[in-house]
Amino acid sequence: MPQKAWSKKRERQYEHIKEGLQDKGRSEDTAEEIAARTVNKERARAGEAAESSDLSKDDISSGRRGGLRSHSGSGGRTRDQLYNEAKAKNIKGRSKMTKAELEKAVGR
Image (cartoon, rainbow, N blue to C red; front, side, top):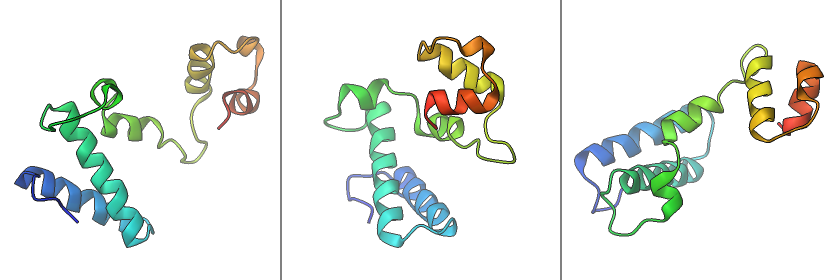
């Protein structure tokens, strides 16, 4: 349920996220919790919240983070995407790995 401290924009954002999650099959309780957490994080990133953690302020935006994790379509992430994630995690032998091996190595 939207909080009183939220602006009209944040209330609309909350409802939009909640409805989208429910459309994807999430329960109402789960959708409400995820939507509230997302809105609160965006408020923290925008400097609208009275208190916020360093991670909330410095992490990538929720929309960008969700976009990076949403590649579960026909083949999931590309080999190049998996390779770049393996590189960021400093996984040895990544250049000779197949896509399947990279998926296993990065743990997703």
